[in-house]
Length: 206
Picture (tube, rainbow, N blue to C red):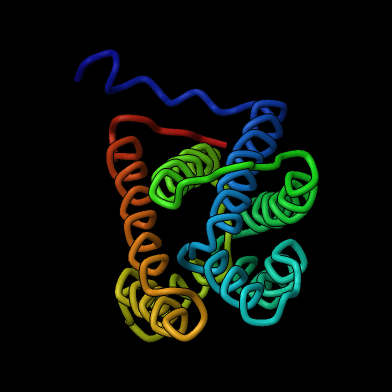
């Protein structure tokens, strides 16, 4: 066995976790603002909050925070207090930062294609930072894990079904071209994660 294989991964310190959560959620918040300005949609809980914002006019920051509240009980049971508290902090920061970013950042022109790609890249990078510090960002993920453990329903299939349901509902809320660009943005998010968050390439321990 090589020295590298035998070596134990170095744990993240508390201040590293704090910095990562703040920076990761700032990336996410900017991605959300870009999506909102271009009238695009994301997946999972953020996508549901954006869809409700477009349909009702209620602010994303409030909707995103409120939608996630019921899922923390499941998170505690399935993933522990540490993960739940970090996730609660991340959701809260995304809500606050997205509200602040709307006031701090303005666009005189924002091309929708650029918004889909850059917003997806920012969101994917933000999620990557959070995942590497064992932090989640949304109740849909927690519910998927619970349903898989309790009923054997594959988590990936459930999340895909939820995303498809959100995109289907969006057909009645946003223009078709923006819906297509939203799918492109989702591809960018997932490719960012798939390329940079692979088992064995990086092991973050918190």
